Image 1 (cartoon, rainbow, N blue to C red):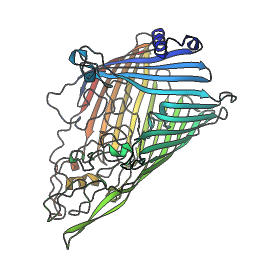
Image 2: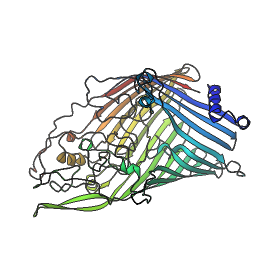
Image 3: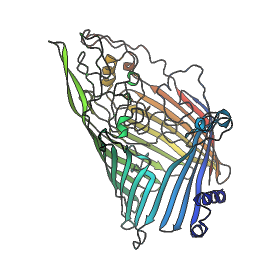
Image 4: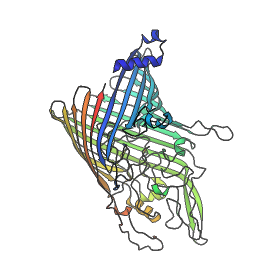
Length: 575
């Protein structure tokens, strides 16, 4: 495989470069992932959570067959200089994404295309492409990595709840000695490259900076870090309500509000339900277009054109210790804050004249997360316990346009192999509950890599996820929303993470297995179950808290929340 890949790459680089190619070493690595199996009340044909996943669907198709190919090609000139290309094909659902038997190339183009009859999908993705080199005369201590690359902020226990993704960046690292190093990065997540009607450049860039300083001593490692992000008011991430993490996911493109996504869990830089609108009729707050006494039409709630840019920052420390081997202790503590200028619009009702006025203020969000895990590395396996706590939204602050959840950018916080991004195979179903753990607390008991037979391993885990957001927020939403308050939201690019409040929670059980058929070929089995318990406050009868202050909350649904499970097998070929 490596020989074939090298020959293909040589052809792409040009047949006339034989002299240069002879001085370059080319190495290929990667994997094929295949998965097959069933999933009930989980995302169909995708690893992303769907808000309706835990609600019974009639005649739903629960079987899934999917594959993905990834390869990294290192073009090595010397020990001090190389170029890296990282390609991906997939995820491809079998029978989906069209094929050559169903039309031309335009009908089978895109990341997930080519799974139907005829295949021939136009679907190669460039995930990474960068130059990696050491400064001359520094004894390979000063390194530069420039281009599209993996970006990761520290997270010792379960990965990073702030940033773990690919992006364009300039990263510099310096190894001071065997105990101390320093890494600095500048990344540009977005740049609209747009101009206004007068030809002037718009403020449409987003830049992120970080400093990481790992200290490694005998038996433990501590990694303090800090990051800062700034985004102009015209940044594309602020303008696209379907993909942004800067504004609530229930905004339409024209700035109005989509009532169907009223409780969005935007765990990104502005994690909120429609925080910028206040209802003059009930309690001075609202979260969508709502009728005003004396007016036939609802308020036209739009994002104010004076909205400004966003600034966010984070600080944290990751800790790892194996000083008391076979015990391994890991922990994280981090804090983050963000602010957006002129983002909160308040409607102030004047009863005497039955009119209202508006006022504009900044939107702010801040919060923290701590976690801890303790593992015991035995000869037969690794039992352990872990837990985390992340602050949630407070009702009183929420009414003022302030959130209590830590801002995130693009997270990958992994706990269980079904509820979070930790399945054995990248194409098996996972991430059904959260991508970041923000607005939640949780505990887990597990035993990993249990092996009594050569090449056969088993892992068992039980996890509980609880909400830390104020339950009163859901009650406020119910006062303004005709229907059940949904559970989905937006979390750092994933538009459908769970928004759990105090008293709500989910149980997850994983029982996973792997067997090495060959050194490079692994057969996997994933078995998992999730039980979701939601508050009755999401589904209530309510008229109005002012006209009928003694109206009681009465549950009208909740029984339609179904358990989720998966039973899947997979094959992974690593080369």
